[in-house]
Length: 328
Image (tube, rainbow, N blue to C red; front, side, top):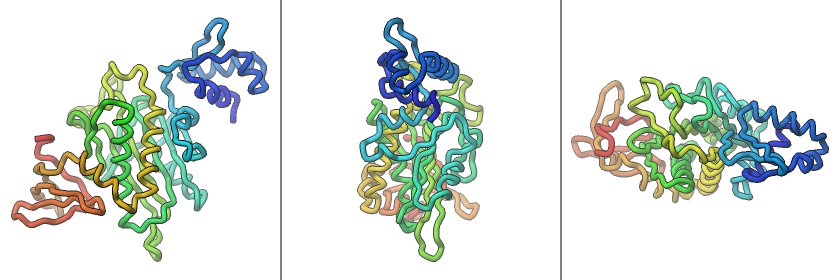
């Protein structure tokens, strides 16, 4: 670990409190000059580190840069050794997670980035991922699940995001089947799950779960094509002391709680509570033909049970639905 990261780790552990330069030097076996140079470099990278006379250095509570120690400080004890790979910018956290997963057949971990230059969404769409306005993360896992149960991981991730937001804010997010999180009638989060399976065994070898959350609106606003669709978790007045490391950690905590018991499907009750499409009129396309239906339930595999216009019922296992009018 570099000198900068070692100093940052100590400051993260005492975020909001001052640590004297001499204490840092003694703890790390460095000179005061080395400490000063590293602090200056961290400040240039955007960390808000205050030099307090006669007290030392303090990482401000308003400093909000994603880091391994910042995330780990909020993780549950059982996840303290979970591998975390932070990036300032990356093409796609899902792509990086896939590369890391291929390095070791038993490896798992979390990739998180301040920005994605080629973020991916479902059905070949892109996911707008500007710098320092959201959290973009991907879990890579080595599950012992069949394909049917692996499909539940997407719904599990949606529940985990909602539970995390509800825990650290007063917001009440809702889910649009399958995997979009909405707040105030706008999309604030998308989830993309990708699997590598073994054809002979029918088991999933590797699972990549990508999650992108719009925490605050970009300073230049959303692109024109997203202005009527995309929203953010926080208003401009709520962002000052919001800790994105905490959000990442809580998503991780809740996701792994659900993931460890995913086969019992108990989390689907939480999914149903938040799925706002139930009882609303939707349209969907199949073989280039558009149909109308009303969702009436979520089945044990996370499928959307719908009632067609002619009264018969069927289940959608994948695809995209369009609300005739949100929250009507």
